[in-house]
Amino acid sequence: MELIFEASVGVLLPFLGTGCGAATVFFLRRQPGKRLERFFLGFAAGVMIAASVWSLLIPSIEMAQKTALPAWLPAVTGFLGGVAVLVLLDEAIRHLHPERAGRSMLLLAVTLHNIPEGMAVGVVMAGMLRDPVAIPFAEALALSVGIAIQNFPEGAIISAPLSAAGMHRRRAFLYGVLSGVVEPIGALLTILLTALVTPALPYILAFAAGAMIYVVAQELIPEMQADGDGKTGVLGVACGFAVMMLLDVALGG
Image 1 (tube, helix red, strand yellow):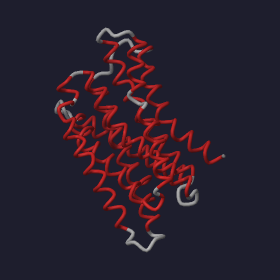
Image 2: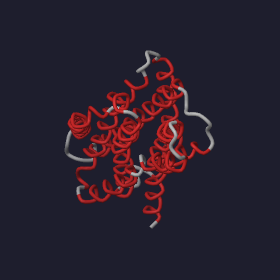
Image 3: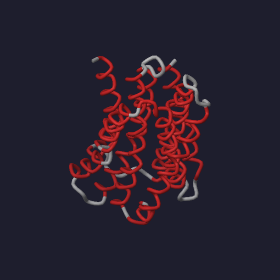
């Protein structure tokens, strides 16, 4: 029961981060400036890069080392599989980028990129439930906390512009919250599916890492450099990477 409670906490934390970010619409008088948005996008990218390495790829390799397979095989094939699936998904929705289709498309873009984040949390929590020694709760919690931190500005990026455009603050808050609903849903579904395919967990961890890295390279990095000022975004990447590394080493170590 204790492991189930810990997994529930880990699943809900990222969604709480999105909700808290969306709630800033009740306190802010104007939407975040472009420079702050670029920093937040870079911060999210840094968190996702670090999480992909420490919380997904390294555990995938460590699990594979306990099998007869080459340790690199699940990590490499799963990672490339995650990238490939996101490429196909992006081909289906590539005309829905926020700068081309307005704030409603920004909501959709953020929601879609929350899917691999929820999946990443789900596979780590599933790994913890399967083998608490290989993936202790502290290490799994580090991923959830890191994603929750980077979800905070995402919630604000959705709700604040909608409110500034004339939408009622409660409705803008609701849209911000809804953008994060897919994370706990995706995490729970992933946990349930992973329980059915436990031997494939190293591949699934790497798959989630590939999906997250694709989102970083395809969505976040281009967005943070859209106005030609990439330095603010790069600073955000460094800060996000450092924070996630600190969380993972401090909590996981």
